[in-house]
Length: 572
Ligand code: ARG
Image 1 (cartoon, rainbow, N blue to C red):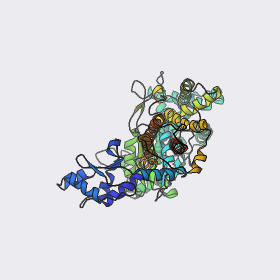
Image 2 (image 1 turned 90 degrees about the vertical axis):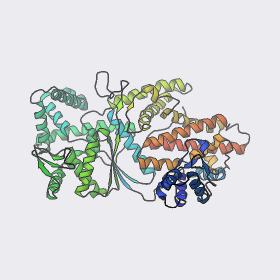
Image 3 (image 1 turned 60 degrees about the vertical axis):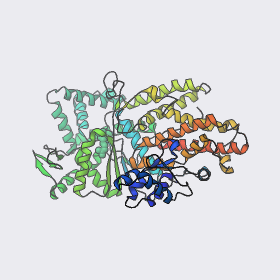
Image 4 (image 1 turned 120 degrees about the horizontal axis):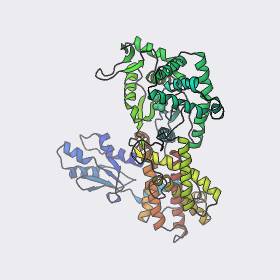
């Protein structure tokens, strides 16, 4: 059950006269400090101000009127007009007991399931994936998992950049500078080398190269047999390199419709915009003006070529016709913000206004110098080598922290901890901010890290092993749950909050809402573990009650980490 939602409904029904129930309900939040109760309703002050009333009086009236039973009794009026809600212990205990045998941990499927297309990862192929691609990949993957867990129909689409200008650069490089022997042993490496070489020549303004590369792209788009054949030769190599990375990351897609897929539709898109009078000619290009003061949206360049924008319009049309999505999430770097603003505005005018199109933007990964992360040589950091480095760093930490494990165990654990650290460090940021990449912080055993949560999970499992007991046994027994100490109560309360956390993460499209919750849960577990003896509890009844809390904590951590795409280990 979504506890927060349930409380909000009750408060909405008790909204003071003249107030807006939705606004009043949305001012109900989990308390930041246990001394203000478990939840707070903070809507009375604003309402009283608007109606020139005494906020404490308004709050007292609501306290009398609101019916929170059986979750809670009458809320307390505090400070200038806050209402503090304290959940009833017997109710918490009942809920926990139900949760113990609930396979979904209290997460109910959405009443109105949505169809959501998640456009994520979407690298430009033909150059190796670099650190910049990790964000879209892990954020998109995690949001997809969260939405699916809530019962939504999710279509994960890797909108590969397999048709753009970088292919022209590779084609030009191939025709002028290829190293066949290198291609035979390392096709992707050779293509990457050619890309870099051509790019460097263009940057250095070597005469003719830029135009020549552009001409190669144009020939490809115009079905030139040689270029099309090369494209078909290169693509499988590029895709297999990408697949290797996705396999390592445990990321899958439902469809992988790259830009090339939309090529045959582009001419019609522009014709349609023209015939509807939405586009016009400007300096030889076909454009749509959204705001006359600003640069227009170019849908056909003056040389006749269609571009990224045209492709994105065709994609919107195709998705609408194929899946009728309610929502489309574009998990893309915030630097593309203007493109998406224009795209969405044009789509709307074009008649595609049913689906909620959202740019799920994210910031940049920075190095210690607070500039975008680069290698010492100034290149982009390759994703493959980053993953290797993460696992190597994790191995050091694991060896130090888990001296009892066998050495092959160390390697396996390091793999899970290293990948988890990289993903968690990314997902635990507010996605809009930039963050500094720092191995020692990412792999700290204490603090808001993947390793800390994985460790908390392993600890929950080791308690059962030590006691020679199984979680299944405890579940079957349906023990009475006691929350007599503050640590037990705090832990139990958090276990009830998974559902509201996931709904919030899904509505704000922010995985860090989930990481914050899991961190908070692991902290509550750690305090519980220090203060409440489990296997040495004063009675079997108490022991089993605590084991039930341990089991629920372990399951919640595992499930939550799973929604972040992070694995757990039974023994660390
Ligand atoms: N390939 C693009 C890039 O690497 C990202 C594509 C994002 N998706 C989209 N539908 N535009 O910048």
